[in-house]
Image (tube, rainbow over all chains, first blue to last red; front, side, top):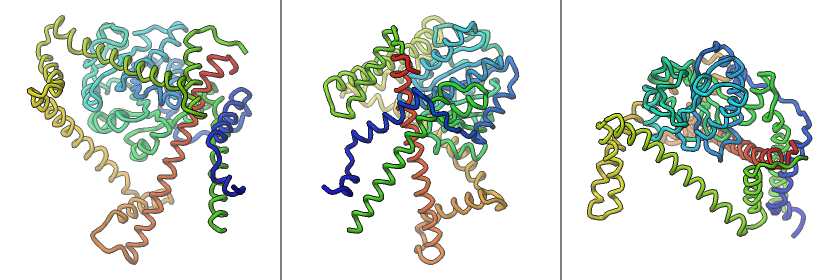
Length: 270
Length: 200
């Protein structure tokens, strides 16, 4: 096999090893590559930053472990901002794995002295997909007990909250369906709530048309969105640290695509 | 480097390494971890769903006397009738109810939010490059799917532009998929290098 043919048939294990190396090394010793802030992130930040202490925000945690590394950092960054501002957070999930991410977010702040039921609450999983989103959107009382088994009516944070219009904001952290489409179709359209999205990168093309039309006010996209949000907040954290690895990973993939194409055309020419 | 003492950090990291071993070759350790993952996910989903039935149906019926909830419970149970040939037809009632509700809800939502609102947001004044791209992009893609006239002359050129724009869109989608997959890889490294080995 000559050189050109070899370039077209690189062993996948070599690609994997290279990719693992170029992503793992900068995580251990970051290169501090520059990271620009997109207008969408600034808009998202400004909407959240305009909230008043004592306001309550609804998190719809619609993702599973398979998408969590891309979406959970967004939820963590926004939660940090809200806790700093004294804004309360109620979480609900229309994916059965969602509640455990709510617990992950909240336990961290409980250790810091915040109180469950006062500063945040996890309403758990609501089955029924699109129908459930519609029902919950119009009547939060659909959920009678939270994820920890407390009656929802006994939680101080839920005082005065009857439907999703009583939340200052609704943010859907989403990695697929049910998610942002269902929220827009069933709740945003009919109740006119202010809806934001923290979307997995794969889900961005599905969410973008709603951002353009103004049905979703702003969107953070994937790990990069989380990193940008941490920077705008002035608290660079785990997501920012991963951006060098992400950029180098992309460079390796671009190189392989370019090399593969050059080899393809050289081979065709012969 | 300070390796974690937490047993769950060990299980999580070793599980990820075992799954990564598939890169080189399928092997029994990979298969074992794959089965554990599938089993654990199914177990978790089952427990969450049982809790949901207890909280939303069983407790309200038995403790609060909300007997109207018996109707959805019975419809739900009827879904399982399909496993018994002689009464399988009963499951159609529940299916019909679900399909009816689902279609009704979707119809209003799709027409209002995904058709009318999207069409409205495409009707833009041609006063900026972005708006011009958006309007002509939508028109050319629609033209590509317009089969009532023969695609020649101006129609052909418009449809061709639509095809190019769709291909660019597919490229953007693929780019997002690649970016998302690298994020997932980084999440796994965070567990292995950070939570387990304490290198981060």
